[in-house]
Image (cartoon, rainbow, N blue to C red; front, side):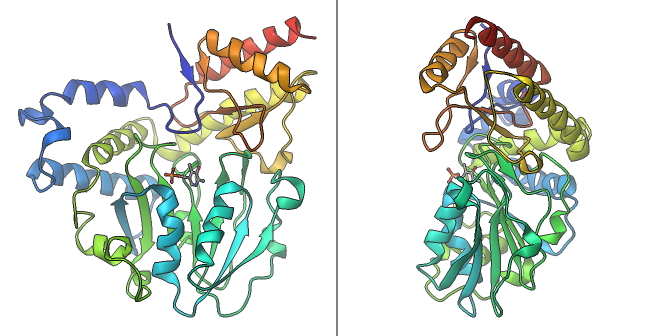
Length: 357
Ligand SMILES: *Cc1c(COP(=O)(O)O)cnc(C)c1O
């Protein structure tokens, strides 16, 4: 049965990417070996690592001021790596717009005077605070935010311009829409939402920010360690980096971020339009702040929500159960979710609405 997977992560990969990996799996490029079993010091892997790196820079239009690093530990490890590398004066400001940004702020507190200067907690994270009204403190080392809130389904459409380096967790919307990435000083993202299988974490950091980590920063968390070694200080997540390279090739072939943005906006538009006109389903998020990657929705009745998730799953629309913090449903419609998947979901929702009014 054809299944559409709406999981928030790990999530769908493009068929083209999976087929290329399948073709290469036993014998990568005539090496007689799988990427899963070859030395990370081999010429084969070196080429993969370099191509992944340069394709990502090209897709994101990054200038030469940045290091692109492939590291391990997930985005969650970056919650600690960021303060450990960037705190010099010992002060940073955090914007908390959901679960992950809250976790990031909580880790940072251990390493310095890190404070939450804006939050949307008052309305259960259903909006993004007005970035022009945030009072950042003086003498801070950086501002941290989460560009797309995977659980609550919000995203920034405008970013603050503080008088300090800007750091963003872009785990759930990197490469999904055109953003001027050069306005950020540090971007990180776990790959398993929009890029590759779990295992690799992308860190994009301004070269001038890696020189003065805190003395207690572990060697493995120092950006400088991996920057000096082209992400090969120790064994990297080779296969995940290879899969990322295939995704970058796919994205480039279809027209890069502008092309995928158009598709993403179309998909999200279809789904929000239907939800907004539905008498059964609703989405709680402020319209201007809606994510185009993660779309939460509910019926008025938690039992009906459970029924929906169960019947959708039986119909091949899987992993639609909402996060335990918000309940209801969530459709994650990342880059690799085809338009057809979203249309099939909407048809199913219509049918469910008719049957359950
Ligand atoms: C999934 C997610 C994380 C956690 O990523 P891990 O790689 O599991 O540590 C952090 N931030 C955001 C925005 C996410 O969507």
